Image 1 (cartoon, rainbow, N blue to C red):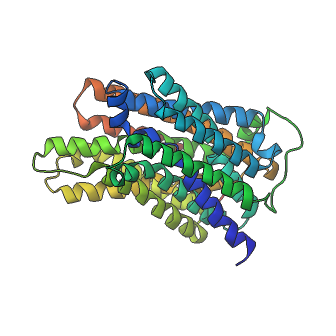
Image 2 (tube, one colour):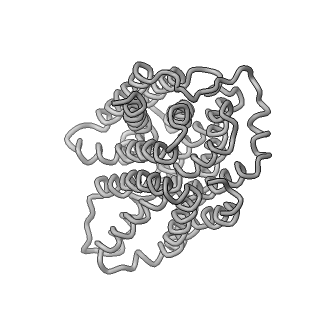
Length: 391
């Protein structure tokens, strides 16, 4: 096995292990609410705290060009250990809502040195076939994001604290793997000096800007959908008295199935180009957003699950392809910073989306609110011009 073939599985495993930190609190949300007397709206705030931490982290990492000036594998390891530590802090006694928010914020902050840096490492190793490589990498992110829901189902006889500890150990293991087995890649061009203007100057490139705006539209929908998957299932249960779902297991499957579409999208991009496949996925997820309020009326729960599975696939299939387009349309020495600043803005958008839907959900029982997720894909499709973005 060539070195490049062995490197990709290590990056994938490390990314999977570490990104499980992202939704760790969501997988045990009911237990957190009970143990610390949280309000029912805690889900939105705790999720947004991670997103906000990630935004601040990516902003700091981008402004100081961390991923381009320092060894990405060492940055990844350092952030994995700290992210695992702050996630572990959730199990401490006498927590308040504010301290829980703080721990999730700091976990999100150090995820900024994991997700975009992992993609940066992949671009350092894979010049050709980048879309396929990032498809696997984002697929690992999707699985890591879904993992807490599976652990919640499999570890019903264990305390929620055991689940949190397991996730922290997994993240630390992933960081160690990256440090030990993934040196600097052959296509890495190290940034030689601090230049905070890079975060702004890269947007002067029209092709880069179009790809970035497409990604921003995709992000409006993605994390809000993932956050509300258990709630979508619960709403259907409440509307159909004869239906009883295994919500943790189904939530895992609906989110995790996106990993398959990421890989498929990566392979399709090799033949048809990343821009065409990204555009198609964004269009299909937009349709899902628009028709989602009608799906709750389906009398057959299997059709409803099939719809959520399809949505779970198309909602994330374009993510590695937009990242590929971003990386392809920026100078090699600035790829880490470009990926990081695009992630920063994209995740800032997720906070607005999550809070908007959460607040509407608290004041209305209408399921029409989920159609608002289409705002991002519509704007993304409008700005992501097919004839202006390099394939």
